[in-house]
Image (tube, rainbow, N blue to C red; front, top):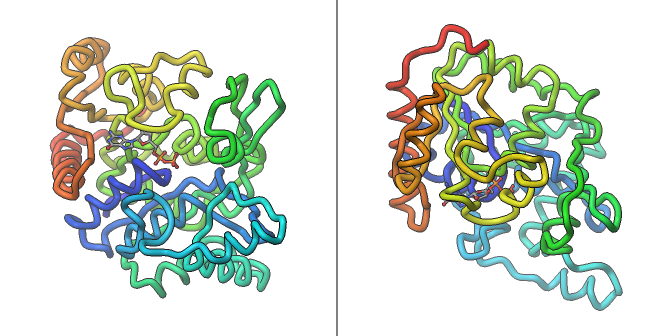
Length: 316
Ligand code: GDP
């Protein structure tokens, strides 16, 4: 069994590589839900959607979100009706949000709804939302607190970041299957996802970080930082706002208490040497996923390096 913790962009590309080398039945993907939002009255779970679509072969590769070949007639019509249209939902994508909202209002949990939608789209891997409790990333800025989507999509991450918090996390519980997947997997992988707003919310759900510390799985993370910057998006800005160095060493700090191996880009060879001296096991490999071959090669390299790293009987 292989379990992956992920967000929805770098994480989706990495999961795409893994799905091509691991049988679906052996793959569990634990997904950040702290970016979830109500949009036009519908429950949207952006990272769960991206992971579902990539595993179903439906993610738009050009856009990196939403459904391949989708149309945007509803969005246009909503604009004409005076509704906000900064969050782009395509017509086929909306079907997912409508069905999710309907099933939630019927009383199903996000876990059940996710399983139903992914099953209907032919996904064999198990997609688990991190929690069925509402956890919400709140970004503190000079104009007030923003949700992650307001900060990232609506305002193009231009606002200075004063704080980041995960509202609801302390009362949240891991969703069914999450703790068992971490405890019983041979390998747990942290995708090259934003450490501050994709992986940290998962780790903030009480019990998950402890389960990683106690797990006998080999645990490896792929760095979303190459050199002194994120490959894309606001991870660098957000790490800096937390007083964290924007480097592979900064990434290592987020996961040091449970990580067996950090996978970094070959360009970070010198920084990797420094990190090894601090006691961290580090593996270098090309980690920029431009093509499908890049994704598969990275997934293969990470899995191989993780399996070769010494089994940790206890991470604490
Ligand atoms: P989000 O939910 O949209 O924030 O997506 P993720 O958290 O899964 O992914 C965002 C992170 O992916 C960013 O910090 C990027 O630096 C990282 N990323 C994107 N593409 C690549 C890539 O090709 N290689 C690596 N190593 N990281 C990537």
